[in-house]
Image (cartoon, rainbow, N blue to C red):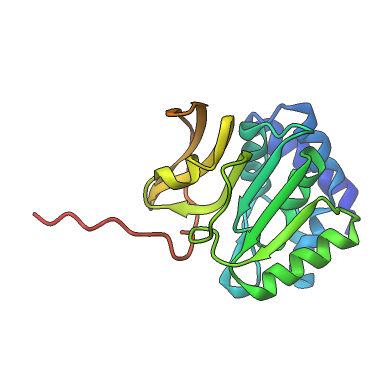
Length: 216
């Protein structure tokens, strides 16, 4: 398998076609070997426009989704990043290459261990992988960027309050078959804006609080 050619095709045929044009994002996704973050039996499809199965019933999102995530939150070299649901660590690695520090939370021990090993193999050392439920853990409100890998029934205030002023939160909210990718920006102490970026559908994040069903 010629992974270098597959990576180039991913950039041209998937990312650029889906309006991922930020050069820093394109450069980092061209540099990080995505095949290192998928099970051996799926490596030939590492750069395909498709979800890749991981351990614990999870999946690696398609490259174009992850490219849009990175482009939306615009990680800077001095940013402090929180990632909820890091999986095998591919998006984590990209964030680590773009930002100063990343705290990556993963619920499943086998995925957390895989993410640590994958990041260490690439000498990415500004990332801490924490095992636990990122929706229940307490964090200081000191993040410039927050990425949620998985969908929530609806956006809530808890994660957005962990942002510093000027901070950006990416999440996908709604119910199948169509959900909305949202960018929440903290403008001030009690001032947030929410922008709809694109429509998609991601598997739900485990342990997300479900709103009560409406009954006629």
